[in-house]
Image (tube, rainbow, N blue to C red; front, side, top):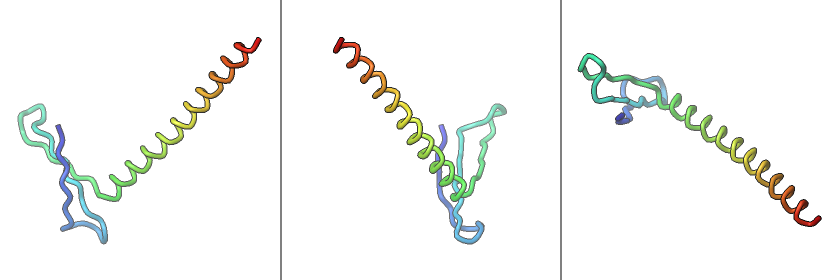
Length: 75
């Protein structure tokens, strides 16, 4: 399980940091990694855009299937 915390200190201009803390690593020690806020925002934006493209593709395929079913029902 990972917890995220945003920190504004000691970061580049206008960028916060997201602190990701997992409970323990394999050796039993606490493990902490940092990613910059703008990098996290970029990852979320990319994930959103990819999901939009996939949903549009799936809806196009679904509409094609429905149209095919309707055409075979008319015969």
